[in-house]
Image 1 (cartoon, rainbow, N blue to C red):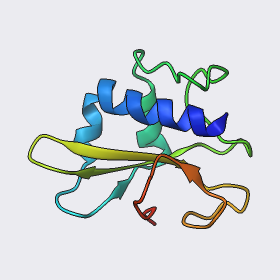
Image 2 (image 1 turned 120 degrees about the horizontal axis):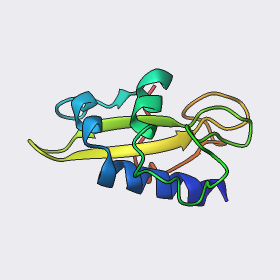
Image 3 (image 1 turned 90 degrees about the horizontal axis):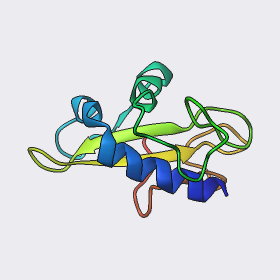
Image 4 (image 1 turned 60 degrees about the vertical axis):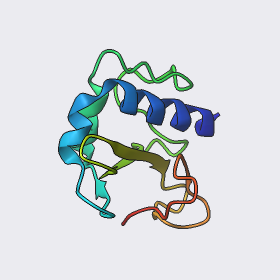
Amino acid sequence: MLSSCISSVAGEIVEYSHQIGNYAQNGETWYVLTDNEAKSVFSNERITFGGCSKFKSQPQDLTERNLKIAVRRNSEYGYRVIVWSKGFDNVSGTEDDIGSFGDEKIPN
């Protein structure tokens, strides 16, 4: 269920959150949003949290920690977004992370 939630959140951020591009860095550098920046992104009323309907503001993982968001610029106008949970160990980049990162390495 969390995986479905994360996938829907990532898709909706790309589709509806125009300010996310303001955080995007050029090239291969990922920018990890702070909790306050992520809260601002999630405040967009068009983001409905598809598979995470129990959340009214910022979606959380099973340990009730806020999901993490990172953004990177792909081109002059495009960007890539990944959303993830740091898992039960609360450390990014370990085996228990769940997210929309595909083959990407989770940024620190």
